[in-house]
Amino acid sequence: MLLIYTKTGCPYCEAAKKHYNAEGIPFEEVNLSIHPERIPEMKQLAKNNRVPVIVDNGNVTVGFNGSG
Image (cartoon, rainbow, N blue to C red; front, side, top):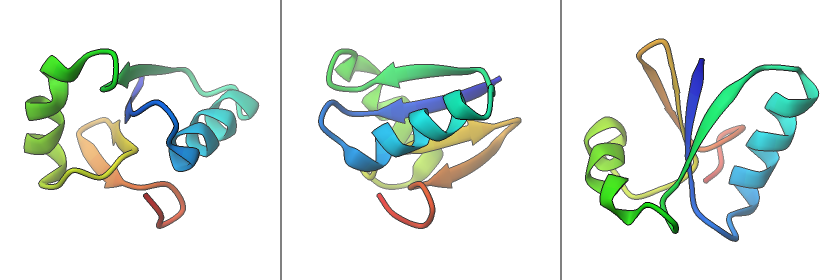
């Protein structure tokens, strides 16, 4: 299952979630605005502060369609 780190108000995060929902691809969302305690975890994976961060079977992608 995909894991997507997001923040409230992020248009790229919303676009990613909309895309995966439309494709019927299940994902777990970690909204860092609600769960700031998970920011260090996201930073360790992504090596930066940008969202969305999408983790798919250990493969980490920062941004959605090259943006974020």
